[in-house]
Length: 390
Ligand SMILES: [Fe+2]
Image (cartoon, rainbow, N blue to C red; front, side, top):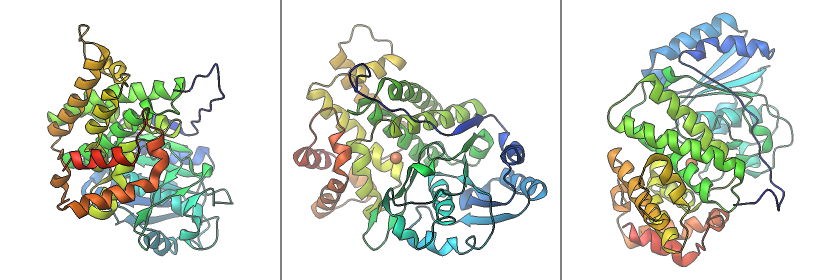
């Protein structure tokens, strides 16, 4: 962890956040307060088809706002080609902002569209870091899953189908201006999405907590996120769908996103990318399968600060920090089990040794994430971790 008394640290949080059951009904008030009248509205297909509440929100927006240009996002993990295709609907419209309602992919697509509205040329030209020159249109984000934290982060992830890789449009301009946490948007969320999104947030919070670039401030958010996620994902696994649980998960995943962008990702997050791209495993599930193994590896190599997180949810004063940290790995695995997530790679359709090699070889494309791990995590460790999970 970086010491603020010894080195320069930066903490950033640019999104105004509002939470409450039914808060999406107030969307026109917030939009008008910012003098935004004509909006691009991007809605997740799953939500559009299954949650009646969304119909009421569209209706109220159409009544209260000027132009409402609606796009239903049909792609679970959008590609640059898809972004290029759907931008045509908006490019000639005079819009004031974009509103995204959906999971992380829908919110990322919203950010991509807001960027292309003020930056000419093909979507793929903005792939990478700091390629965006003009300030995008403002983005308002309403997550309908508790996971990516896209409503607070500047990341907008897209798949490059040619290179078979996920590399987003990453720019400091892409922080959403406003994020609304409305538990009613999670009313139609199935268990498997609660599980994959929740474990994505869990991966963000655990890896940002231990990352070398973690700071005093980022850790405050990691800790609070961990508590909210651990306690409330257990409730989800037990069948609880109360508004309190949903709001807690939304806020927990937002905090995890704030921690992640102010600290760093780690090996589990990095290893999730090839599993997602080559085996179509949802991003959150892909990260969670690696988490217990990475934790165990770190503990056996002398890193015991997981005990601090363990202490937040368990009362076991007799255990040493090492014992608590090892138990912590077990508890995270148990949480995945409770949520019905496979805990081996073969459970995700990885079948042969060549498949395992594909994951290993492609994970090194995100080397900076491995460098953030508190103990050395080189090529040999990547290989060991992947083979341990077959
Ligand atoms: Fe993630």
